[in-house]
Image 1 (cartoon, rainbow, N blue to C red):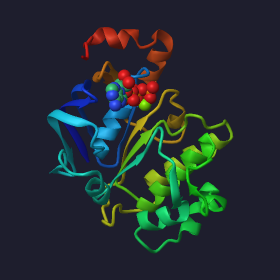
Image 2: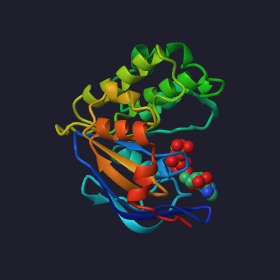
Image 3: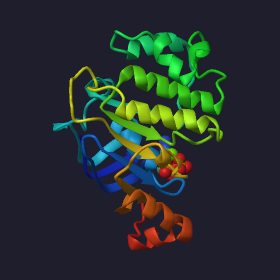
Length: 249
Ligand SMILES: Nc1ncnc2c1ncn2[C@@H]1O[C@H](COP(=O)(O)OP(=O)(O)OP(=O)(O)O)[C@@H](O)[C@H]1O
Ligand SMILES: [Mg+2]
């Protein structure tokens, strides 16, 4: 589904990713751990194609196509969707209209909003005045309308209270295993996801087959998600940093 080859990326004159290699198979989920400021969000924003992130080296291949130079909307059309860590407020854009535009017909915004209990928010401007947990559900609602093949989820559970985590975790699970086909295609391969998590709580809802640790802008370890999380809890990120220290300019 996704291949990242030797990716080096700059933003604001700073190298934030260096020689990143990673792949996500069709129908599989990978998680990404790493300390604050290590480059996790930068990786997801680069895969989505936000133009501030300048690819200096390497390439991104999605479903066999080199998408490194495609603009963000072309990547969205091909089936990549993102839940951002800090999505912008869209003043003057009603959530209902965004969900309708993101959707491919058939299902109404009201029907999509029901499982996320977001119906009362449809008439409001996107994210304006939403609480932290409400923003996550708003993002998930937009994704459920888009129905992408590859989900890039940047800390879906952060800022979500213990009760709502059930709803958010359940929604993520439904998105990944729910409907057959994605991005208007009748693919039977299943959907893929790359999920950033600090706590690993999302692992209670989604079956992840592989985890990566990002340190200083590069992947320092990979392995079984639960084993790696346990290791990080026990020893912190220090061991991972040691296994590949890389100074990022
Ligand atoms: N426009 C910019 N100019 C300069 N540096 C930037 C810019 N945007 C991001 N960075 C830097 O890139 C580094 C990586 O940031 P990123 O948001 O990818 O980290 P992260 O791993 O997602 O951290 P967190 O866990 O806190 O979300 C940070 O040091 C950040 O300050
Ligand atoms: Mg981040």
